[in-house]
Length: 191
Image 1 (tube, rainbow, N blue to C red):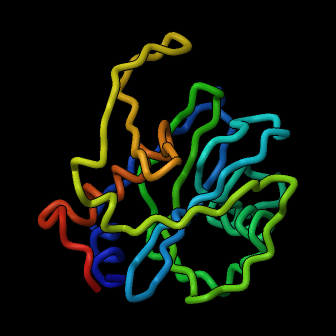
Image 2 (cartoon, rainbow, N blue to C red):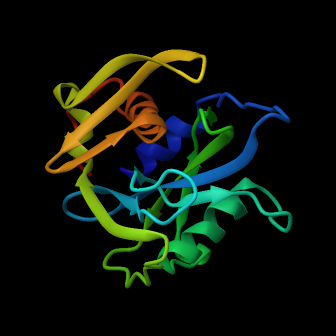
């Protein structure tokens, strides 16, 4: 699986967004290796300034001291979940995405070690959610709606998993990942 992801991402020419209008940020799409491959999400607490209560990937805004956006993603991963950068195997990155809240997000894809002992920052993270990768490979689990918001128009993607709805930019990043890596075999999720 890691080889497949790395190869697909290495052959993809990621779309970059460069604009002074947006604040640079980065996330990690954390893949959990195991007999059942999973994607790890965080649910943000209600007391945060941006994106309260939303399900997202670990990440955040670039700090002045961050050498690059991968460093940003790894710093935020550590701040939110206590995961060390050296313990993450980065497999590549995806297209940049802009948000209606004026961020541009660069998503990195990485594999986390099995049975990692997270140290969750409960000021930022209300819940960790693990979803089997195979769930996202079934096109019936993805729906979309045409939205107009903040003078922007486009498709908004949704994945309903149990009581959780993964939507917006997070769902769009995930759909981009699935389309790039599994375009030939959308329902194949084995190792």
